[in-house]
Image (cartoon, rainbow, N blue to C red):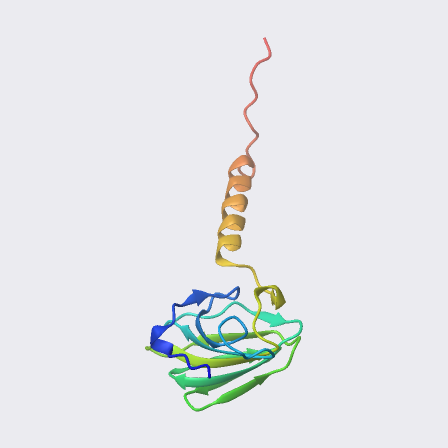
Length: 153
């Protein structure tokens, strides 16, 4: 018999940026075809939009409230709501409350990083783009001004 306790599990961060504690999966039990985890999204935070090639998911909100987008549809969600996410559907979850948003995530087959495809840039990628754009802007002469040229002599 496999029994785990949420309070005794170490959290880790998934590819979409969620902090999760994996309750049951093939990695820690006799379960082979699915996984169950608790995810937490801080107040004002969100997951990165993503989809899963193979896995279907069920999100069950246990604490807090937020907004859930699947493909182009966005709806308010709160404790007690269950959300079905078919494979291949882009989805994102925002915490719109003042407390940590907590939810259970059931994936079948079990969650794997390599089954998660990010569909929006990461914060690090956005910061890199801003730095690159800023550096390119600094190299361009101001509008109406010619770059200074050194005398060859």
